[in-house]
Image (cartoon, rainbow, N blue to C red; front, side):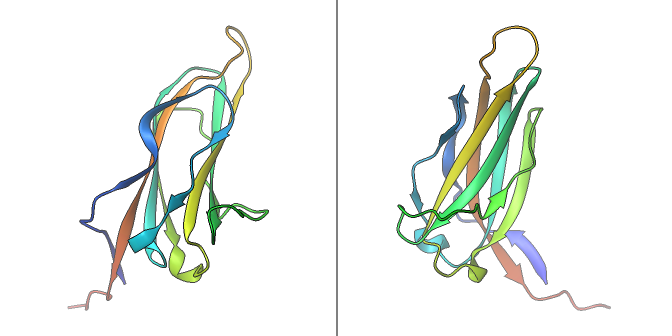
Amino acid sequence: MTVSISTQPKVNLVPPETLVETNGASPAYGLGVLEGKPVMIVLGITEIIEQESLHVSIWGSPNGKDWGQQALFWFPQKFYQGITPAALDLRQLPSVKFLQARWEVNRWGRGDPRPLFKFGIEIQELTLGPDPTPN
């Protein structure tokens, strides 16, 4: 099976350059045409200061209100800026109609005790194709 990113526009679960200093969550995002499809979720961190961490999780809900007790996916804890993609196959989660991002921030060491991050999270459909035929 081959995997490619769809030509459909990207959706921002968390808008790019969102500034956060505390733990938080995005609004519920109704999946619409992405419901029941494989998606690529991309965490992009554009600003971070030393001695801090960001831990982001993705949650699913059938109604945008009840999120359950467990995240669908956790990105690895991040200490540096950069881009981290992750695939999530919503075909295996037919009851999920809404997504929400949640983040936990931590700061230690010297200087201002408040964490400071700028990041965004985008979602895009993944297109799955047949396995290429060997020659």
